[in-house]
Length: 199
Image 1 (spheres, rainbow, N blue to C red):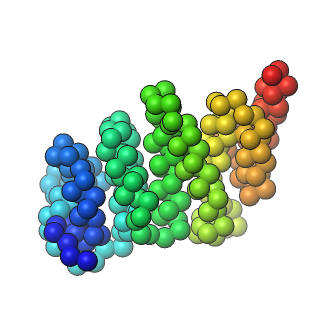
Image 2 (cartoon, rainbow, N blue to C red):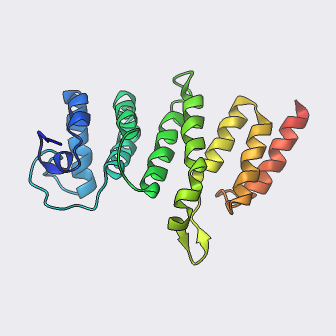
Image 3 (spheres, rainbow, N blue to C red):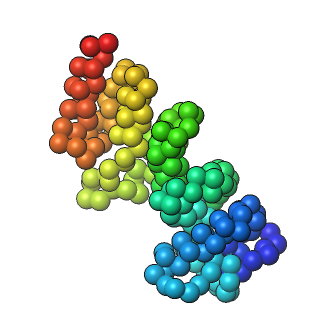
């Protein structure tokens, strides 16, 4: 593939992504790049890179997190679109899909389709669990997969308590009973059942 740019953009063959950004978005991406490097200088399209362990998905996920923090939703949408055909490992895809879900989750008050888009990416993330689970194990314990909790929360927001409970049960079976809350997934199920009983 012929690349137009140098820097990490050229190295990762993300020229098409860079060209899809407006000048303002390119400036933001350059700022995010400098912030990631903790440097006041540097550009993602300048300088020769001989070798890097960074993948397309890693770069896009990191840039997506900065864009979401800045509430640059149009830019985030472009990042997610490019991420759909980006290369990387199963773990890279896990983090990217979780971050894409987070992007839409934060937009729930702003756009009517956001909750369904968040569900789409969270479901894809946990659907791929078998492909990356072993990479997230430390001393036989898997790192917490927040997509389970967020997916359950999305279904709860929609009033689909049965679906939310089903996700919590899947999480427990996958060794994800700790969702970062005091009651964990078991407590979440109890609360969801109580809400469902009230109608």
